[in-house]
Image 1 (cartoon, rainbow, N blue to C red):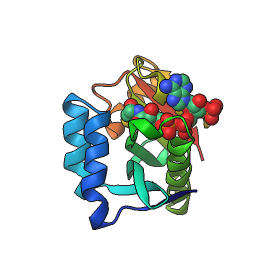
Image 2 (image 1 turned 120 degrees about the horizontal axis):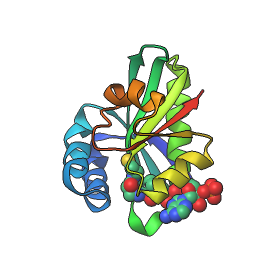
Image 3 (image 1 turned 60 degrees about the vertical axis):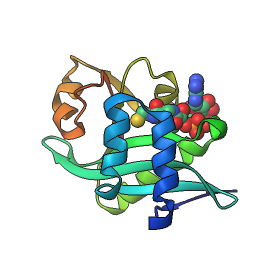
Length: 153
Ligand SMILES: CC(C)(COP(=O)(O)OP(=O)(O)OC[C@H]1O[C@@H](n2cnc3c(N)ncnc32)[C@H](O)[C@@H]1OP(=O)(O)O)[C@@H](O)C(=O)NCCC(=O)NCCS
């Protein structure tokens, strides 16, 4: 059974390990560095933490409050079992609770798994150069990314 809950101090090392094996370069650096600053939720299977997502809420002109999934990762051995989906669904529940009208995330267009995850949950995809990308790029710190996912909550 998959349980999604807030990260506790005892989960930190495990979550950092999942980010370390899931990301490279600046994504790896920032996902770990921001662990203590962003709200982090974890997915647990039989008591083992197997995935995590870092979240924040921001405001953006024309969009109001926007909930952002800054980083999401599932341990390689646990991918493809619906865990990423459960993390994003819980993020959306928290964003609604906090009065967000939109949820958003960003990634590289080469990240097929991330694109599959967000589109299967009803997010629209906006490429660099599009109006939506330009409007949300700063709020999402999407400088290294070239697609933004957006969903009306
Ligand atoms: C992106 C990631 C979090 C997805 O987690 P996951 O637990 O494997 O995803 P799920 O099993 O919940 O899959 C959700 C949907 O995406 C699809 N999907 C997931 N991985 C896929 C892949 N590699 N190729 C194609 N589709 C994929 C699933 O089929 C599913 O679609 P469906 O609901 O229509 O059947 C995971 O691949 C990961 O940790 N990647 C490395 C880190 C990363 O790139 N994070 C995103 C950028 S911040």
